[in-house]
Image (cartoon, rainbow, N blue to C red; front, side):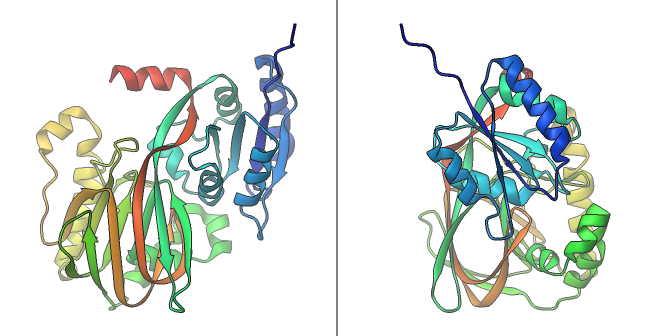
Length: 332
C-alpha cells in the first residue's frame, strides 16, 4: 500500500520585513500540528524580489506558497503563481498590506496568519495583467493584485523616500503627496476600453483597480470586487482647489466611511460620475500617452511608460484564507 505523500509549504520571505526566528518557530509549529512536512525557506533579494524564488518553489513541487513580506513581495509571488494550482497564503508585513486589507485578513497576528495558511481554504481571485511599453519600444509583462496607476499616485510613489517609508510608514507619503499635487503636468492619453471606440482624455490620474481599499481608511473604488472578472477604471481630473476638496470629501468621507456599511451604501445610493471622478468597469484597457509617464503597480514604481495594455484574468490566483472568513463571505 502506497504511503500518502506529505504536503510541503514554501515560505518566500523578505529578510528586511520579517522576524525570521519568530516566523520559523510559528511555521514549524503550525506545519507539524497540521501534519505537513518541513517547509522550504527561500529568501528574496534586490535582484530577485520574489518571482525567481517562487518559480524555484514551483519546480520543487510544493503544495503551498507563503508570502512573508510587503506588497512588492506579494505582487512578485502572485506573478510567478499566475494560473497555477498552488495557493498563496499571506503573512502581512510592511506599510500597505493592500491585498490582505481587501480580503479583510488580520494584519497583526503572525501566529494566526500562519495557522490559517495550513488550515484555511482556497479562494480564487482575479489578477490584473499588464504589458508596459517603454520609450525604447521594449515591453515587459507584470501582474497587479490591487491596482495599476499613472499620474499623481505613481508620482507620489516616485517621490517617496524609501528609508523614510521604512521608518515612518504611511506618514512618509505626506510630503510626497504634497509634492505630487503641485506637479502641473497632466496625462494626455488615447485609450480604448473593451470594444468601445477609442477616446482621448486629459486627466491627473488613471487607475485600474482589482480591489478598492487603501490604507488610512481610503476606499478609492467602492464597487471594486476582487473576484468579479472585471477591473474598475478611475479617471481623476479635479478642477482646481475646490475640485480637490470635492475629491477628498468623496473618497475619504462618502466612500471611506459612509459606504463601509450596508446602511451607508443604501443612504449614499449608486456610485455617480462627475467632472472630478469618473468610474467605469471593464475587462481590457489599452492606452497610449503623449510622453513617458511614471507607472505604479500595487504601490511600487515601475519606471516610465509610453503605453500599456492591461486586462483582467478571472480566478487566476488562489489565495488561502481562514475557513471562517470564507464562511462569512458565503453567508453575506
